[in-house]
Length: 217
Image (tube, rainbow, N blue to C red):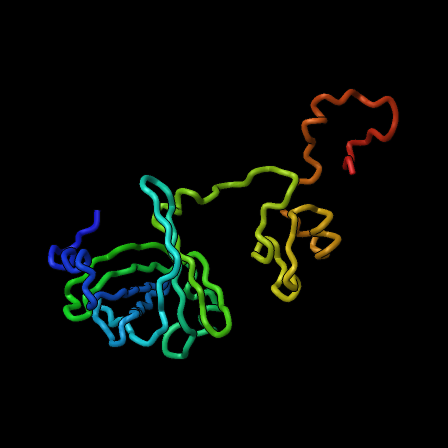
């Protein structure tokens, strides 16, 4: 349950023109940064939230219960805040982000609307788009592996091993034939293409052919 001061709640209900958003970002290396969509710097949680950073709230979704929920934010890449080099270095991976509703006329009137983890951040034409996961997202994390014929890696991630240049904007259908034939990356295929299917359960022993325990391919 959110703890919203009564005076701030009244202003939110009345649609007061002095309300704005602020974000407080805490990286894994201890760096703390603040941003606001107001036209002046604000102090929130003891953190200076910079104006003119270009941060804006994007689409958000949330559900009751244990649904993960999500939010997005976007802004500019500049040397004083989130730089392209730091994004590329992965310094923002897993950062904690809190979204606040603030009365800029009285910054002490603030309420935290949402908190989550920076799941993905991508660069687009000199700006960034950040996708944030809600606190329940950890419950959706896959633990261990599921054995299946198709690859369970994400195209371009560490398990796949391909660089952005090698991918070249192409997509992958997760089949071994595509991994090996299109990308030349069969050695990193993360599936099990020789797992017998349902038809194997009803197959009868063959009377001829090769029976040496080798690959069925």
